[in-house]
Image (cartoon, rainbow, N blue to C red; front, side, top):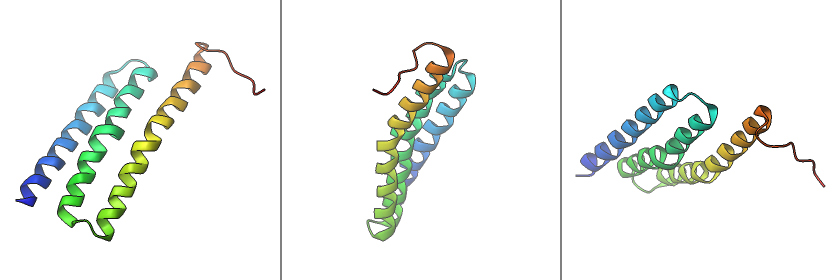
Length: 100
């Protein structure tokens, strides 16, 4: 039963990753591509990580996978926001803020 659950989680996570990647290739601007990147960090990675935990159990390897997925979920939006702000600054959409 656990192999069926792991297969469903892995298949769903892989499908989400492939569809988000194809959509990112079709996107015309960097801002739109960033939106598809967040799908990878917030949906596909937890699904694939959950599949790995189901297969290996919650031992040392499962805890390592969980730590990586949580770290990715926490830092992914921060990286996306920083990249979007850098692109907006480069394109002149926002002003360069000076530290006060």
